[in-house]
Length: 216
Image (cartoon, rainbow, N blue to C red; front, side):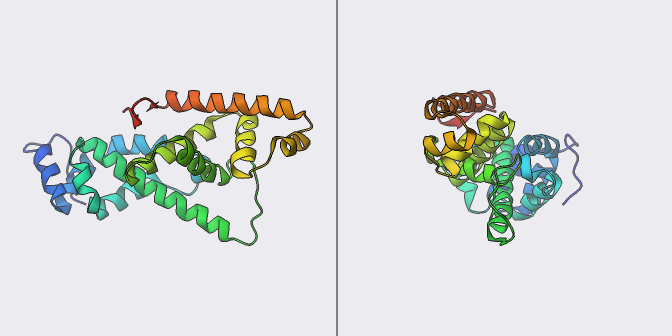
């Protein structure tokens, strides 16, 4: 990657962006270098749970810098350079998350576990994103899934567990009540509170359900 420092004399961000949209990898690398601190902050907030010891934000950014914009260029030209890069690194992060999740699913030694930090939380994030968020371009959908995963990881263990039981394990409230030693009605109440808390966290993280877009 070129050693370009943000703000150096002769910078022309708009020109870099236009060139990058046309497939100029050097111009794209300049943009990535300029916004590297902001991209690291963006990824730091989304790498959580079982991903923490496995993924380094610098590696994700480096991979995106090497890939360029690819087939998403036509859509990305409507965005600001920073927003464009955020979506690209978010999408790459999601691809890496899927890789790790698929590896665990194929591991015959792995038993399904609902312990804190288990990759099942990412699987639940995908299910919830598909069921409560409207379809969008793949870049936006990847970001939504990562944000849902972030929300789930920030919830209290009890609330996350009941969401996992209902949406990931597909258990009935009768089965959940038996597992937890509570009544079926109590299970339903806990689920309702958990779902409500999940919605609050999603909104606090910046998701606007009114226009189906993230606010940055």
